[in-house]
Image (tube, rainbow over all chains, first blue to last red):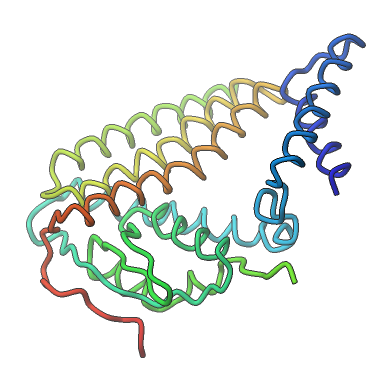
Length: 156
Length: 108
């Protein structure tokens, strides 16, 4: 487990530094080993710090969320440019939070906030309170399509 | 040459989108709705500008670092937005809303 993270960290170090001299490689290796040693002592390496088990579902989710972000952006930009009192109708709505894992809940709340037009304001155990800019964005979110796209998979 | 034109198009449109976001922050009526306008600069504006810069950089380590910057923005900006909105709600700031009660759509 720790070895896998070590390899990952070292590749990351290589990509960030771009140096391949033996001395610097050695120093990089040493710093990776120190990091692994410290994180092992702190017990912070777990499935949440690097959610490998979600990797297979990530590409579809990323494509979905990017499309949502772009279309939501265009909608809000239109409303800003043609702003009048009738072009927005802000409201607070409470929608279900179907995700079981903490990570899935965090991803869902962040996805809601990332799409302009909806901001997650408060999370409870079963629901999530969202501030929506218009009735349409609120209706879109209530269909639950986004909730289904969220990768939510327990490690067990 | 084509890449140059494309990257400049992306950079300029990113800048324009950022300006629109700023106009939105100015025009919208209250804190919560202004957050939606700020969300534009967080997402589409940053995406366009960073993509334009990646095209300028070409395929090298700088491009990789730009992608990393975008990834970090992608994780941190919604978290801070949520923290702000949550803090505003807990300190009793009432949003200017059309319907005063929270619409409960959690059961259907």
